[in-house]
Image (spheres, one colour):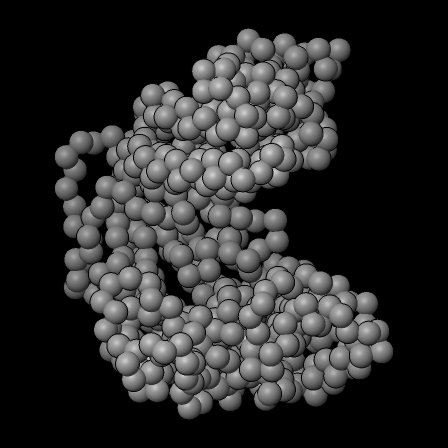
Amino acid sequence: MLSKPDTVAERLNNFYINLAETTTKNLPSNTNQDNKLCGNSPLNSFYFKPVIPEEVIKTIKSIKKKSSSGLDQVTPQILQKLPLNVVEVLAFLINCSFSEGVFPDELKTSVVIPIHKGGNDKSLASFRPISLLSTFSKVIETLAKIRFTQFLNKNNIISPSQFGFQSKISTTDAIYGLLEHVCEKVNDKSIAVVVYCDLAKAFDCVNHQILLNKLHFYGCRDVALTWFASYLKGRQQCVRVRGLDGTEVSSNFKLSKHGVPQGSVLGPFLFVLYINDIAALNLSCKLTLFVDDTSLCWSGKDPVAFDQNRLALNINKTKYMVFSNIHGLRMLISIEDSIIQRVGEYKFLGVMIDQNLKWDIHIDKLAKCLASAIYAIRVVALEMNNPVIFKEVYHALFESHLRYGILFFGYSATTKLRTLFILQKRAVRIISRANFRDHCKPLFQNSKILTLYDLILFETFRYCHVNAFQQRGNIHSYPTRSRENLQIPQSQSALTRNTVFHYGKILYNMIPLGISNLNNHRFAKTIKSILLRSANYSFNEFLENSVPLMQEYVQ
C-alpha cells in the first residue's frame, strides 16, 4: 500500500476529512436546534479571566513530556526552558487571544499520522488517525479549559451521569454506578437490560453550529463564544506517511469542517458538553456516560435521540446484555428497525462484564496480561540488581493491571482469584530474588506490597470511605451502635451477593469508628499499614488478623 506514499497520504486525508458527512448522511435533517436544548442554562455568562506568567509556567510543566510536536517542531521540553521574560510575553499574547476572541490560525494546523489498528491493511478504515498538534496550542487550551470548567462546576452544568474528564471522578465510578443499578434491579426481581452504545466516529461528527449553540446555552457568550468559534473554524490538517524507503511524505492541507480536534486538550472536553443534554432528557433508564462510551440500563421504551446531535449509532457494534434470575429469557431489541445483537459479555471501560457477574472472562484475560508482565519483570531482573527498580517495575507492569477493576472482580469465586494470586506470588518472588518454593508472606511484608486480597480490601475500603455511602443513621433516629455503619442493600440473589455492593460494605462495617472517622488521607494510610502487617491470603485471614489489629489501633 505504501509503494505510492503521496497517493496514499492524499487518499487518507480525503477519507478523514469526509468522515463526518459519510457517517451522518442518512440522519434526518435537524431544524430548530435551539428549541431542543435542555438542562441547566445559567443566567450569568462566562468570561476568560486574565492569565499570569506563573500560571503559564505551571501549565507548561503539566503537559506530558513527549518528543512529538506539531508543525512548529516545538516540544514541551523546549517550552520548559523558556526564560521568564519570554513567558511574560507568552502570557500577554494568550490574554490578547482571550480578550479579542481569536484563536491563532497558526495553531490550527495538525499533522495526522495513520496507525494501522488491525484488519485489512488496504482499507482506509483500518488506519486510526493520530493528530500531532502544536504544544503552544495545548498550553492555551489548558488555560481555557481550566477557566471554563470552574464556571461549569460552579453552575452545576455537567450532568452527574457524565463521568469522563471530571475532577476526582474515574472510570471506576462509572462502572460502579452502572453495576450498582443492575444489582438493584436484579434484587427487586426485575430484569435489567443494558445497552452498550457505540457512536460511529463520535469526535469526527461533532457539528460546530450545534456545539456553539450549546456553549451559548451553557453560559459561554459574547467574546468567549467568539473565541471558541474561532478555535473550531478554519482548522486544517495534512496526513504524513512513511514510504517503503523510509522517506516521509505529506499530503496537501485540507480544511476540516466538522468534529473536534483529536489529540487536543479541548476536544474531549467539548465533546462532553456536546452530549451533556442527553442526560437531561426524560428517560426511564440509568444513563452512564464516559465521554463517548455510553451505556443505558433500561426500564422503559424511550429512544435516546443521538441524531439530534448529528451523531450516528454504529448498529453493528452496539450490543445489549440481559441481567436476570430468569433463565432462558428471550427478547429482541431493535433500533431504527435494526435488531441489535445480544451478548453474554462485553468490554466496558476496560473491564469484561458478563451477564452472570462472575468475572471469569475478565480474570482469564487479566491472567494472560499478568503472565506477560512476569516475563518482562524476569528480563529486568536478569539485567539489574536493584530492589528499588524491581519494585517500581512490579508496580508499573504488574500491579497497575491487577488493581484496575479489582473493586468488581475481587469478589469472584475463590478458585478464579487463586489463579491471579499464584501469578502475584510468582512476581513477588522474582523481585525479591527468592526461590520458587520460598514462603511468600514474609516477602510481601518485607517488600511492603499488598497481597491480592489486601488489594481488594484496600480498594473497597478506600472507595467506600471517599464516597460516603448512606449510613443506617440516616434512615432511622435510634441511637444504636450500628447507626454509623453503611446501609447494606438486601441481596435476594446469588448474582448480587458476592459483590462490592453487598459483601464489600459488610467488610467495611467491621472497621472501628476510630479509623473510619479519619480523613481520607489518614484513613488510607492507616488501613494500608494494617493490611501490610497482616499480608492476608484470604478474607477469612483478614477477619482473624487485621480486624484485631484495627481494634488495637483505636484502643
